[in-house]
Image 1: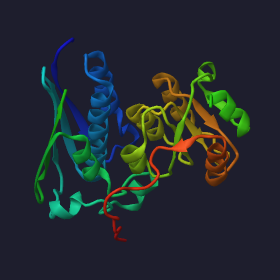
Image 2: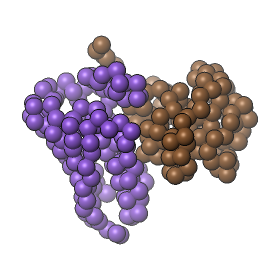
Image 3: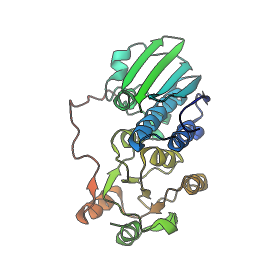
Length: 140
Length: 126
């Protein structure tokens, strides 16, 4: 694995013990490829935030990672309640997290905002009652 | 400051990474909110927190923290320490509270990862 890769990781909703496992795994993989440290770090942070979102709010989800010569694409889909007002959810500080999520140190309403900050291109779509789809593109 | 000097200053117990005490630290981020660590911590900084769950180790690994300093005399559970060994992140524990810990480090030349938040203030709903 020197140039690129394509792989997929399942994430189970409510499994807080495992939170971040996929992101740590993805970061390890990216570090083995010839990608600048700050790019790897941004990809890892965006993946972590997304992973915790699935665990906190969805039933299950998938993190798809695609690395090409030019970019890292992190494509995340979940089945869950979806987001009714995306604009509001993107705001810093807006959160619908319950006490359990907050006790773990999450639910500050920074997640989506931080994901966007780490991305070069960020797309989000969601359907209420079905799920949410994130496309995080980071240039290498 | 090296991790060894930090450990001495704060009477801290080194729980993981006793062989990494020569690491040089210049910045720190204090938080019990991991979301904020993900948003604001800089590579190489030390994470100062009162949380002890395994997430603190995974987050330290994601944001490239050089070490974790647990405050208020808390000793993380075995699974957190095992994970820290696995991911090669030093973990120290001090009896000082978060404010004292941060203040003592600041007075010794360690600075924060950011001084102030740029952009608009965020209004946090209940």
